[in-house]
Image (cartoon, rainbow, N blue to C red; front, side, top):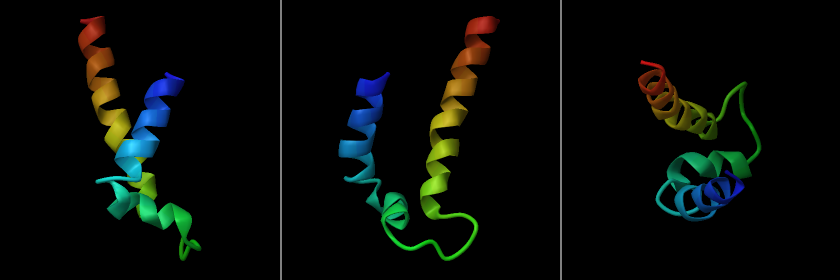
Length: 55
């Protein structure tokens, strides 16, 4: 799992996903930052796959 996290961070978040991740490298201006959307982006497919495995 650490390998997946490394690859996602290095080549997705610092690549095409920089639009969202850039907010993580700047001073926060509110309670949330665009980078927080990655939690949803990764959680939704995970929950769907978990539910599919339980069925």
